[in-house]
Length: 532
Image: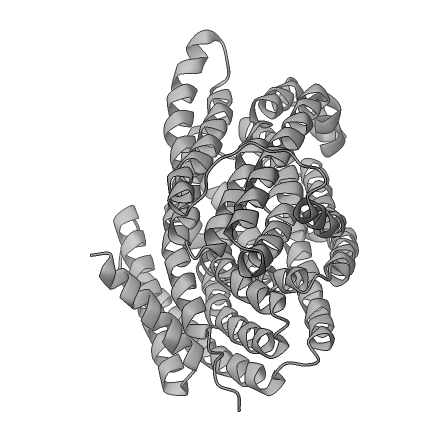
């Protein structure tokens, strides 16, 4: 049977580094969501913010961190491996200048057409609330420049990842959350004195955070050897190749963003607060996706891109199978934990101020259905860059359209009975179908990969997860019967439940001898030890 790929240790080390940085960011992100929950609850103002932020954030996913990041890393890695340092840095300069101009023009168009964009996203029930559309349009205008800052930040991140620097780029989003919290809260307290709603201050804080996320990476970029030399060469072969990869990638990502629009539209027609409940739940769902899925994708992408440039399919197969096994190892138990502990986690994190027990119940329902698709969501983030590295975007495009069809079909069949839960369930179903489709396509593209090795790893992870889940249910039920209600005891019970179940899961994997888990834990432990 295959052993872990030679680069598994390197990927585990890089993923461990990224995971620690991303965890800092996600924790600050949860603090940011707590601020929203305490100050605005789940209703009028936050619903407007969710819709307004969704527009530039959708374009960021479409043009910036999605298509641009994947295409840029594939081309930049090739240049770094084969073209030499001078050509590589020239490409980076050209890409930064070109996309700064392009995204600035797109931002101006978005601001000009903000009113029809908002009305396109929401249903009549949303528009019937006096002033809600006008507030959403104002927030959209304020936050649209976020697209420029965050997209350029993703280019800089791609450069640094290719150069083997993972920690600072992964930590950069912590500064986004920090700027959003500090700047947003300060302005939210100040602006009502001048007649503006407090939520406008949080929108301005989003801009501050985006600027900080870009700016804090620049010192590391210059230390890596980059020197800013403004250049705009539309005939550059590297830029053309990035566009050639981006266009089908954008087409492929478009259905996923249409899913976001579809879900936003349906949520705006449901009970007021549905947009907020889904947003809070998705933020919690995104925590393990970021810490595990994004970390592994970030660490794997440069390695696979390098092997693709060298036409080494054997190493790509081995690296991918090990990365997929690590994804099993991290996301399946996280999914089980979120399903079992959804309500106590949300109650402890969000149930303060204007966020009441009813909002906790509705948000936990959404989180459970999001958690079903956690593994598929994370695995797709690893698989899609493999296609980009192999210069083949057909299958991600087909998979995205398949995802859109499944999402709409599931919503149509279930929204009448499941209400807002249907929108979370539809995403999980759609991503699971996409994972199955891309797995089949990649198996053919790579002329096979070690299915037995992956299947044995999956069975070991499932066995350990079942043991962990049984332990978690027993411990949580037992401790809730022993200790009184209260914030302190909620925190204590949740902490003991999570830590003890994590130990049970880890011991099971050691007993079952899952090698990727042993490597991953060793690298994370070394990183943690080096931090103190």
